[in-house]
Image (cartoon, rainbow, N blue to C red):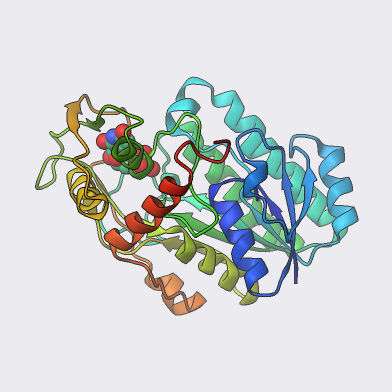
Amino acid sequence: MKVFVTGGAGYIGSISAETLLDAGHEVVVFDNLERGHAEAVDPRAEFVKGDLRDRVGILAAMKAARPDAVMHFAAYALVGESMVSPELYWGNNVVGGLNLAEAMLKLGVDKIVFSSTCATYGMPRRIPMTEDHPQAPANPYGISKLMFENVLIWNEALRGMKPVFLRYFNAAGATGKYGEDHDPESHLIPIVLQTAIGHRKNVVIHGDDYDTPDGTCIRDYVHISDLAQAHLLAIEKGVTGGFNLGNGEGYSVKEVLQAAREVTGREIPAAVGPRRPGDPDRLVACSTKAKEKLGWKPARAELKTIIESAWLWHQAHPRGYSG
Ligand code: UDP
């Protein structure tokens, strides 16, 4: 298949493109390189520099590529930023998504795998979270992703599209070639490893007074290659709808720190700071549906395996892609 990968220079997009190429598919990466990295574009892929907010440009790029399917990763993905600048999220994630969907409908491309998030559920009402958990996002980022899920649901009902939404829990880890490099970095595992390398003085734990055994927030970390495999399955199988992707196992911030100390053999100092607004105490996925309907088999579910792969990448790229 020929797959048009928006955001293929970003963290999850680059590794999904790599996985598609390894499986023998053709890939066209469409990315504006605003937050992605040219070095993260797999050299086996065709690269088109473009922005989803350019309605004419995305139609022209897709027309030239003539893909069989789309994987849509290009988006802004910072909860805190979305609370300060929601317009960025409506513009890129919603309007950009609409332009992409319009180009697909015009060109008769019906299959799309959309990079969605557990943030579409909002504050958890039950753990582990299944796909029928109420969707009540607590920030513009989650709303922007849910809005585009809804666009795709109606495009399936009324226009014959075949959408899959993959709702990730906490993506982490790296492959030999590609890893996580955000500027600024806000995610726990890269921050912990940047501290292990010595680029940060200490990790700030965002609150230790949550309703969890050690007081720090619990998250479900899932290896980026396992996520990428789910995208491949979603493209290859004739299914539609939403699927949670997580390991069903939650780890606290302190447990992540401890695991990283064991993996790296470094001290990794940490200090407790205030809570980060909007953080739920626990987010843990039930991914039974993905296992049953997609045949998803996560192969790197161990937290230490996930951290080890990220540690290798961070050591090879101590300053990220740009060096
Ligand atoms: N976290 C932390 N210190 C940091 C970064 C993150 O304590 O420097 C916590 C954060 O508050 C959350 C967990 O680690 O409870 C995972 O955060 P991350 O940003 O990686 O993912 P999120 O769950 O927000 O998508």
